[in-house]
Amino acid sequence: MLEEVLGEGVDARVFAALDLGAAPPRRVAIKLALEARVETRLRLAREARWLNHMQNCTGVARPIEPEIKEHEDIHFLVREFVPGPTLRQVLEHRRVLRVDEAVRIGIALARTLSSIHEAGIVLRDLKPENIVLRDGHEPIVIDLDLVTPIEGGEVDDPDIMTPAYAAPEQRAGEPAAPASDIYALGLILAEMAGGCAPVAGEVEPRGLARCLARVVRDCLARDPRARPRPHEVARVLDIARTDTARRRRRGVGVTMLGFAMVAAILAPFWTHLSPRRPVALAETDFLPGFLARGGAYVYWTNGGGVVARVKREGGTPEVIARGPALCARAVAFAASGQLYWNDTDGQLWAWFGGVPVEVLQRPSKLAGGIAVGEDGAVFYTGWQSGEILRVDPRGKNSLQVLAAGQNRPYDVAIDEAHVYWTNQGGTVARMRREGGTPEELASGQPWPQGIALDQTHVYWVNQSGGSVMRVAKAGGEEQVLAMSAVGLEGIAVDDMHVYWTSPEEGRVLRIPKQGGGAEVIADGQDNPYDVLVDEEAVYWTNRGERGQVIKWYK
Image 1 (spheres, helix red, strand yellow):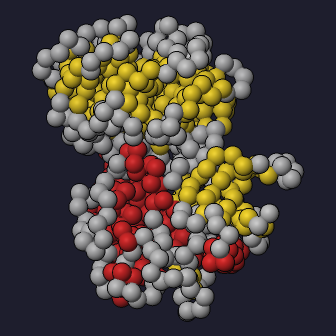
Image 2: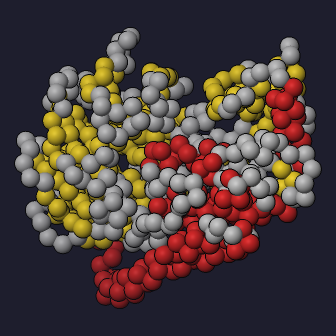
Image 3: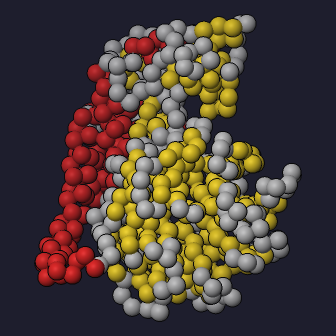
């Protein structure tokens, strides 16, 4: 039974499907030929053979059926369904990945290429569109229709390629070789860590961390003989990952030494103190993203379309929804007890304690933030479409486009009268909840991210500038509250403090609203992301090698 479309090429379309003949039923991916041409059928048959030949290679989607199938003159192949977004979708949404994420994905792709080349195969078409991050984490190569044997043999048209990711020798008409795949890997590393789209033949590493710049430069050497082999790329990146982790732990070690001395002095009184160290409420193989709090629970979204929760005092995490291929993104809890979230395909979902209900499917993909009002109205942003949307789930056809033409609207927050949002194009804006003309509160901001409100001010972080900002709701000059490392992510406020996450430093910090120095409340965190706060504690997600939901008592 065919479900949603996962992707489409010139002569084929890929669907997610439910295999009802399996016990138990399972999800599979079906690549369906769009035309009944002989060339299309032969290419599909060749891809099926390569899938079987590569089924022992690491990081490659597995075949379900050994040969192409035919039904009423329609030819198709069946392979493993890989849940998660493509790397292209992630890059479109976030523009640039953190260094540790880019390194981790780069190591996995290098090992995949090493395994494929050892099998005697060249991919020829490695690009973000052909890489799915399984459950938002593990890169899996899914498209093999242009592969070719290293030693020659059955080869598709050598002129078919993706020019932006083709090596110079491919564009010159020479056969693709293993070094051509390394060139594509260098482009992908540059795009993940530098935020720049590749330019055919002219890519120079820009804006990259030192640990990545050299390996990218080597991969992009014009002479194929000068490029490293896949296992050499993996080794260099692994060293870079170890060095980055060691630098983070070095600061933690000094902090822990001082903490041990203080703890020894305070030992007689320790039982009267509230716990101040971070506590892991949940650990997950998925990458936890955005947080919400409702009743006795903390809720969060995960890569791979998973929404989960855990009790605020701890316990066993519970998966309450497992969606389709794309990532569940932002999540919000309504005062009336419903949980809402959107996904990267623009769908809005609701959960009332049973089966998730699709409230709305918006054709504009890549939804951004989400907020729910006391009246049940749901507000969310369309990052790709540039829209600010309002939905009343209680009524049919209740979608209202409050604003259009916004420059990559991302996070959103509401108060009694207004809806506020950050535009990653550089502005912070608001408008009346019932509609009207958008009002710009701040401009010229370097990639504003996250948004939080109190009674009088709007707060956000500038991801590229590394600054924590606020501006009065009534307008005026924006104020820099703190400077931190670049790559800031989440922000939250309570009556006394502003809290934010700094993934590059592995820290969660806070600063008094009335001014003063920033305080590190948690160090040595593995890629902290979103943050929320209640009267008792601060919560955040860690998106490192293993996902975590963390609680820190105030």
